[in-house]
Image (cartoon, rainbow, N blue to C red; front, side, top):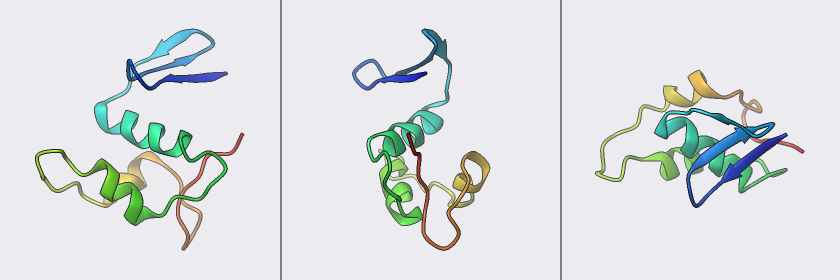
Length: 77
């Protein structure tokens, strides 16, 4: 029941918009565009790195999503 509008950068559950931070949206969009695939921590950090080149702490991932120990992260449908 989750829909992501990649153009508008909005997320919906049962047609109700879910308000996410920019970082939460980036992580979710990356995982959804790689559905059923494991995405490495390094790839996620590379993709969420701040556009201005500002460092994104790798502990950020631990706060937002669960890991597949030693491999990466994934969303399954």
